[in-house]
Image (cartoon, rainbow, N blue to C red):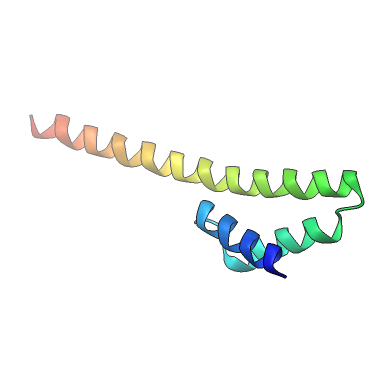
Length: 77
């Protein structure tokens, strides 16, 4: 239980975009598939894809915000 709880806390801190429920589900999936390497790898891949999807959304939002700021700055000149 200590390793599970510590891993959930560590990943929750490292991936603030993920909910506690998502991180808990991921960690439980890893622990339950520790003897099944393909399943273990799939859990890791799915988690990384999910975190990457959020990152892409944030990047798009930031790019859009920067574009709007630049357009506004050019219009004020």
